[in-house]
Amino acid sequence: MGNFWGGGQGGYKTKSLQADTKKELINKAKTMLNDGSLDAGMGFESLTGARLNIIKISTIVQEGKELINEEIYPVVIGENLTKEEKDFLLYDCDNF
Image (cartoon, rainbow, N blue to C red):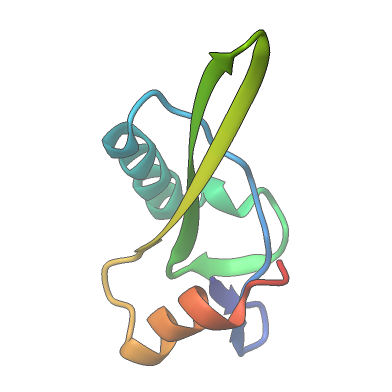
């Protein structure tokens, strides 16, 4: 989520990140949000926040078959987001 050039705010899907732990992933995303690199050059004047869809993947092998389970945990980052901006990131941007 960010401020568009010329006014207004919005959001879109951007970079995918990977890390070994949830804490490492959130710290990496916060650093990229603050330095602007999370934008990936898509056109924001400045970034204000982001929703991370953290996916935990568990794999087991049973009777020779690999079974994969994915759990999705949404996390919102951004230091000065309003309630409305947090709600937008959590509920209104599922189509990104």
